[in-house]
Length: 350
Image 1 (cartoon, helix red, strand yellow):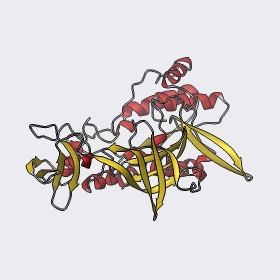
Image 2 (cartoon, rainbow, N blue to C red; image 1 turned 45 degrees about the horizontal axis):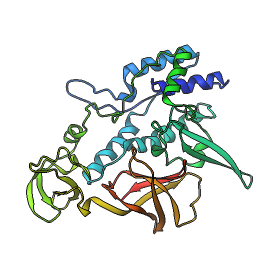
Image 3 (cartoon, rainbow, N blue to C red; image 1 turned 30 degrees about the vertical axis):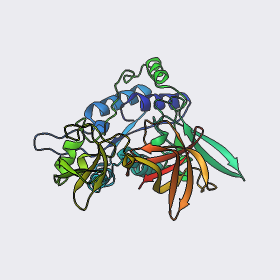
Image 4 (cartoon, rainbow, N blue to C red; image 1 turned 135 degrees about the vertical axis):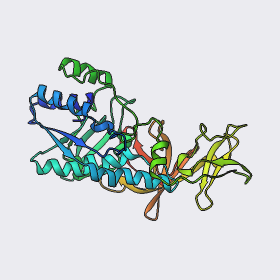
């Protein structure tokens, strides 16, 4: 129960279906400040108040669990470590993997629960295979809100204990249900930013927590044309904020050893395009490796149309070849695989 409309409606639907429910509000790490405590968007006082109001109206109990230190260790520290090494991480993927469907699932089982339900937009189905139940995931009804990209790490032993009540609804339908159920969160606005960073731009957060060293900007042809403010403040494919006149210039790569930012002066520069990528820590949702080579669809960023790819084994990793070259494939982000609308799995781009 985050205090948002999606988890509120998820709870209301389950109560209406006859489930014996209780709510969990998770307390995450917030950045300390000399002037004030910067509230984590996911667990602000307003969010907790709204979660309490919803639970009171539904007639269910609400418990608050503290994941402060685990969140700092697994999510925030990794976020900083990846940026320091030239990667662009996705903290929501790790939070789902280690916190929401990792430690939280263990906690609620210890509290006697059979299922953990969330307000994620994704569909879960079950099929029988040789007397064994196989749980599958697929994109939500609302394609604009679908969150399957962030949930590819889920495993079979977790899926059997998970419920996603709003996966068969659109966002507008969820809000209508919230109004119908007279939930106080019906019109609550949602935030798309990283929950533990208060600024819209995360660069100030990185400056506060990393040793940022300025250095030279060089072109893909080796010409020095300016100075950068610190490599963690840039990401592959970036155009705005590079800080060079006479552009536009596009971030094409990093020379970590020499602390140099590599830029392309042309949007069609070959250094910006990739015919293939290598992925590590790949998880296959169905619990077994697919037959390779695998022809399927893939996303290399959240707000992207699925791309046709071929997936092959490459030692412990996987080689993903695009049918058409792709611009600004970013190490640290996720590549996620689909077969039509079914979520097959995914991994981290090396």
